[in-house]
Length: 245
View 1 (cartoon, rainbow, N blue to C red):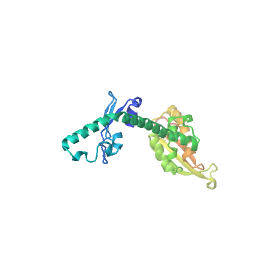
View 2 (view 1 turned 135 degrees about the horizontal axis):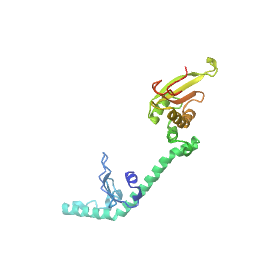
View 3 (view 1 turned 90 degrees about the vertical axis):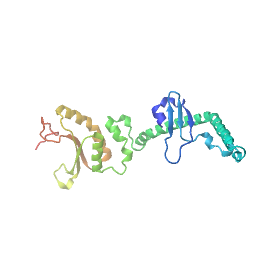
View 4 (view 1 turned 120 degrees about the vertical axis):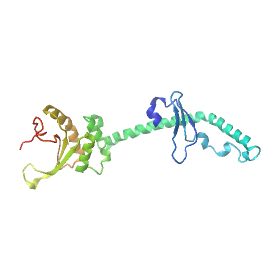
């Protein structure tokens, strides 16, 4: 994964040597990476380690004759065999790099697949980056939709600004008999003049509509707007830092 991220164009050029020192307790996998020589040394076991012990030596080879001489011959044989199996190790390692790249692409595209299949949303057609970012989070919100406090925390995280939540009831007939839930999210942002406030509010509208549709109850009336933390600050802008009494 590291090599694919750092050097994506070198997948078919790496020569790998396996040191066989990757123990159960943690140890670094990549011992050495030499980009110029296209050489990487890994702590893990190579193809030679998969072979049965009898392939390397007889069971009683070290019991007869000089142990030191026999052991030196065995080590030399292992070094030669590692060189012989080096093409197999390199081939398998490069194949793993390609598999890692494919798996990574699948994981990156799974959210797009889920959005198109289950939510009927094409993220490329969404109007702004903020809405697209929120759309990719929808599959993880299965049990959190309709949670107004969670939506406030989510807005604060995505927008990077404090958000004030107000809850109550709303009715267009001034009657409590036909009221519905009312939720307002005030995004606290100071210092905007009238032109900036109108521009930012217009840019926020697609994102606010998406939040209403996908994260809040259908029967609730929801308002998402910018608000100054201090009413009466600077030039008066209606619905921003001033309201009609």
